[in-house]
Length: 356
Ligand code: NCD
Ligand code: ZN
Image 1 (cartoon, rainbow, N blue to C red):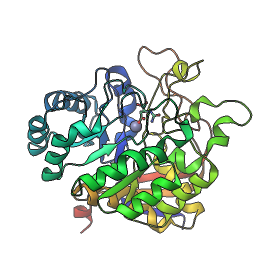
Image 2: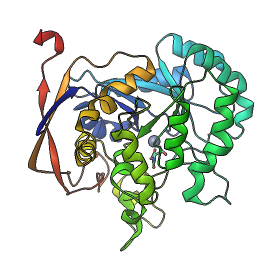
Image 3: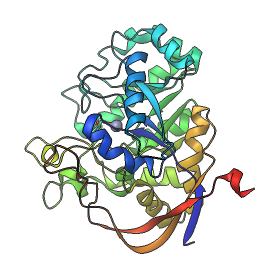
Image 4: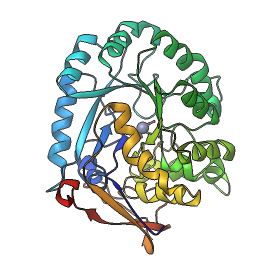
């Protein structure tokens, strides 16, 4: 198969940032994705319905001319989250989901939750509403090894949480381990997972062998090859609980190539092409549309997009070297910058309605 047309995909985990960075990165996502779950870890975070509505306006204002990309908004869960505010945001369509960051787990998560048990009233309300909880699944205890933080989170926090709140829809974001895959398989359809291109294409050797490669550094950190293989097997199996979430997370080059480099891979310009490589390499191109375009909407209770994108297996294109950002001298370096791509996005097929 050298040509593949699929329903337009959505990105169920995306960092769009704000200001000049938002203006620079949004076109890369809007060129391919119909919708994107906008992560709320700005500084300060997006915590309330009002803050999410304002951020949504800034994203809409930054869309390239003619784009109908739809941002889906999330609120950042804190120890002080008001269940009434979340309910109002969900019922008026401003909020799609709520994001749980354990305090200190990742970039801009200092305001995160310190005691999940104290949030029972909020989680009960979300269960009643059918409002999904999106989880950064890593413990932050200093004594837990960074490579074990996801598995320990699942065992100590997530497993009891889904038992305590059996009607709460949960997305375990950017899964990285065989333990996460097993947990999601066991708890679907209550629990689903997003999977990033970098966790499918790389493992910790790519990050560390031959010198530290800061552009491979993200959280949760890349794991061993056997965990990478478990993720590939999960998505290529076509299991409906796994769907596309790039976790595209731009940082200025100087902040990644640093003595204390930021976590996050900027994958937006090439994410769909990279996912296609993974499915292709595993003879599973027939499962790509489910992963990219159908499983996510089904979990969120939304219709799939009406229009289509076409991928073509064609050599000659490469991952861009840089993205210019106003006011940043060195811009943003995409994940796998300069590497040849096996697949290209051909053209946008007409809307389904226009074809009939
Ligand atoms: C994300 C970011 O930079 O905002 N970084 C990352 O490594 N994934 C935050 C996150 O999703 O953990
Ligand atoms: Zn993220």
